[in-house]
Structures are given as C-alpha cells and as structure tokens.
Image 1 (cartoon, rainbow, N blue to C red):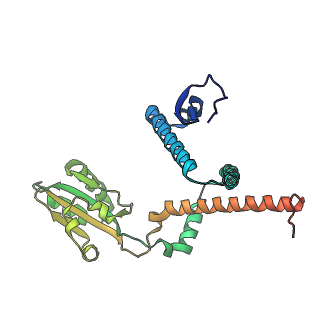
Image 2: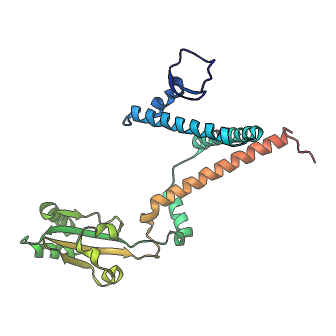
Length: 267
C-alpha cells in the first residue's frame, strides 16, 4: 500500500485513517482469478477484507503497547520463511517425477497394506432398479444368477432397455452405503450378515424393485484390494518423493556452504 507521497495518478479505492488502498494494489486479483469467477465480487471481498484488517490494526495501535522491534523481527522471519518456501516449492516441482509404476504401487501395497484398513464396507456389484410391474423379471433374475461371460452383455442390454437406474461396472469397487442409497436396504441394520448370506439381494418398495448381485465384498477393518487404494498409493509415493527432494535440497545447500566456509559458528 502506498503512502500519501506516492504516485498521485493511481486511483484510490479505499481509505482507513492514514492507510490507503490503491487500484494498483488490487491489479493482481484479475490476473490470478479463473475465467468462471466473478471479478467484481472477488475485488469487493478483497477490499472489505483490507478494511477490516486496517481497522483491527488501528484499534490495536490505540489500545496495545507494541514492541516494534519484535514486530519487525517476526516480519523478517516470515519474509525469509516465505522466500525459502517459494524457492523450495519451485525447485521440487521442477525436479519431481510424478510417474508411478505399477511395480512401485504393488510393492508399497505389499509392505503397507495393513495401513489401509477399511472404514466402510466396499463391494463389486451389479445393481439394477426397475419398476415392479415389469413383465420379464424372471429373465433378469436368470441373467443375474448366471456366471457365464456370454450373458454379461445380455444383462447390460437388459439394464439399458428396462432399468430406471443401474450400475454395471463390475470391476469397480464401490462403497456399499453409496450403492444402496435411496433404496429400502438403507433400513437394514445388519449389512455384514446380509452380504455373507446373500449373493443376489432383491428388495422392493411401493414402486420399484432393486436387485444387487454381490460379486465380491470387503468388510470394515479388512484390507482393501489393491485396485481400491491404487490412486491413494500413487499420491503417497509422489508426496514421499516430494519430501525427500526438499530434504536433499536443504542438506546439499548446507553441505556446500560448509565445504566452502560460507558460515561461521562462534562458541
């Protein structure tokens, strides 16, 4: 923020006491925002935030004995920390390899799979919701009970033609609570026993029939399959690389400075 002696051609946006906010101070907002954001609203929020901060500063100055030396020390510490952070972040992002191989994922999963104990029940399932009075429900039940590969496409065709809603991604693991949402199964309080006893679950409400063919399931506290945590493991591996690069950068800078006698520690 400029003082009163600075560029008089710059448009004044807001004033609190002797503190001024100029148009040049908010130019960066329009440059940094994404196209779908409302620039006027964003600028108004920034101006309101600036005013509130200035009012708090003025109130503090009037009611608090401020140690200017301590404030300046903290500002200097913050400035150095910010410079170091920006340098480190820029270096890490340029150096970081974000590609994670399947072998790395499998190795991490094998060594750490107990750390991924499930907090919810997950399933692989075929789900179909259709009107109760549909005439060919027996055909659907036959297809759901079949394990023949040739009838998978027939089941998908049936779902497309007759179902009000369906989920046929049978290689995808999904939270059981998500797939039964808005079905009568939400009223069932013993999902564990239900899954253990039934491979084909059928429930009705006043209008619809709901079918769940349970292909596979994992219960709470069990180890999830690799496919379910693959993306999470990739992020963990990349974040570990990020931390290792940052630590190596600090270590290398220190060791180079030590080697070249660039600092002195006095007893």
